Amino acid sequence: MKNAKTPATIYAPPKASLLTRILAQKYLLMMVIPGIIVMLVFNYYPIYFAQIAFRSYRVIMGTNVTEAPWIGLGHFREFFNAPNFSNIMINTVGISFFKLLFGFPIPILFAILLNELVVKRFKKIVQSVTYLPHFLSWVVVGTILRLWMSDTGFLTTVAFNLGLVNSRSNMLANPDYFWGISVISEIWKSFGWNSIIFLAGIASIDQEMYEAARIDGAGKFRQILNITLPALAPVTSLMLILAISGLFAANFEQIFVLRNAVNVTRSEIIDTFVYSQAFAANRYDLATAVGLLRSVLAAALLLFANITCKKLNGHSLF
Image (tube, rainbow, N blue to C red; front, side, top):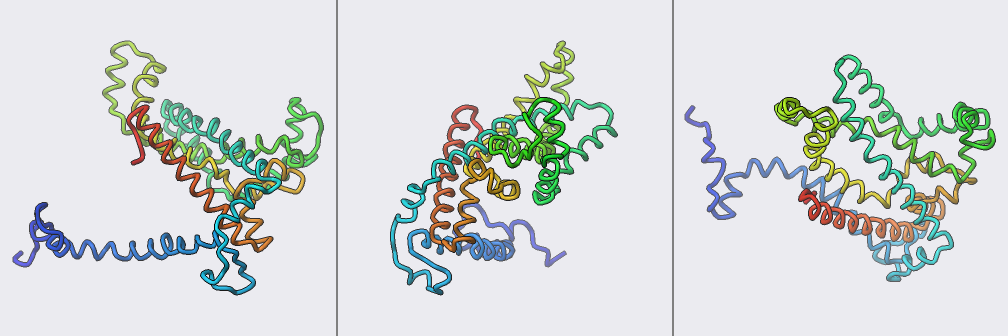
């Protein structure tokens, strides 16, 4: 066809000027414009209002953000001097750490075990059963847990009969049990879904490597140790970096559903503090300051984890 454009007319030579390359790819760039607009409106424009963290701002007064008095780091000092500051930080980091410690390796182990199943029909059933909890809202899961952990609930009865608890009382009303409940319920709900990416990584491994290992006399455990785990190192490093960056986010939705006035000493985290200050106390300035602090800490952890993984095994996020 005479009017058909060849790749040479669409893509300019690498040594062409910037303007030439832009004109040659103008239609491709036009396709990107809507995405850029969405990103600017919903990701970058809100950053402008982060200045609320450094101002004495009240929504109920109807004051413009820029008209609110500038108080600098006052809100940050208020948070650091709060009576429950240490308790909030311990709960946030503690719950997140144990979720990372016990919850991160389980999807990897499950993906490896699932990959070893020979009967495909049974494998699909196991996958479907373990994926299902991910699609349940934490409101639904929280309601189920509240019923099962009541005085006469199913889990309370089982735990009492096994000697795991001393009395048949509401387990969510005991602050000492809250960390364990949040960690176990998080693992149960997410390990099946999180294993998908590791299953995809295992599926991409060249099967001839396993064939060669079997010829050399390597058993299943040796194949997993020397082939599967090294092949999963890049995706494992990526997921670990992202998980470490979330140490200051202990899953607000889960904690908010399971917390109550009795276990608040072990369930108050940064996100619930931000929520209570913003929507209960109308302290949007303090809530913004704490939220901004958490974001900065998460970014610092992300950089630290990325640099550490890159030095240890050569794999990194960026």
